[in-house]
Image (cartoon, rainbow, N blue to C red):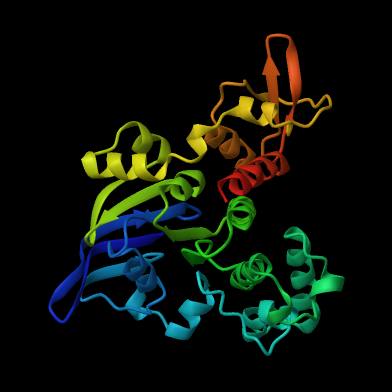
Length: 316
C-alpha cells in the first residue's frame, strides 16, 4: 500500500500540493487526473522520491519512504514517461534488460524475460532484439519503454502521461495493452493523465485534482454518475465526448463486426455505447453483438481500432 498522510509541497513559498491525504491499495490501477498545474506529476514523483514533500509523510508497506534506501526503493519501481527516453546507443534487448541486470539476474534469465515480453506486445524477438531505438516507430519505442519498466516485475509502476504524444491508434493499442499487463502482473499502477476518457477507461479508482488539492476520489462509474461538484461534472463532460458519440451499431454500419459464431456469456446490443464495449474488452471478455434474432458477430480489439482509424482519417 502507498499511503499519503497530509502531504504538501511548496516551491519558494508557493503551494503546488496541499494536504494530500489518500491511500492506494496493493494491485490497484490508480489514476491521477486533472488540468495542467493541478499537482499530478508532483504527486507521482514523490513516490519514487524524485521530489520530497515539504510537509507530511508517505508510506510504502507501512514504512516511511524516507527510511528506504533510495537505490533499493527505485529498483522496486517501474517508471514510464511521456518522453520515451530509451538509451539510443543500446539495443532493444539491452534497454529492456537494464533493471534485471542491476538486480543481478543471470544473462539467460534476462534474455528469456525479454523475449517473453516482446512476444506479448507483438514485437517478434528475432526481429527486434538487436534493433536500436532510432529504428523503431513512436508506438514501438513506447512499447519498449513500458517493457523496460515492467521487466523486473516491480511492485509499483509509475506512468506519467505515457501515451499523450502518440497518434490515436497507437494510443488506443497501448491503453488496452497496459490494462492487460496490469491484470497479469498485479503490480500497483499510478497513472497520470489530463484525459478523463483515458482515466475512465483504465482506472480502478480515479483521483480528480485541481490546484494541488483532491476534488474527488472514486470509481469511474461513481464519478461518471455522481460528480462531486460542477468542476468534476464539466471536466468529465468536456473530456468524455469522443467515444460516447458512438455505439455498437456504428461498428455494424461501418462493416467492422467480425462474422462467425462465437460462444460467450458477454453480449451487447446495437445500442451499447463504445466505452462500455471497450471496458469489456479490456477486462478480457469475448464480446458478442446480438439482436432479437440472435448473434450478429464478435467485437474485438481490432474491430474498435479499425473503426477509430476511419474516424481519425475522416477528421483530417
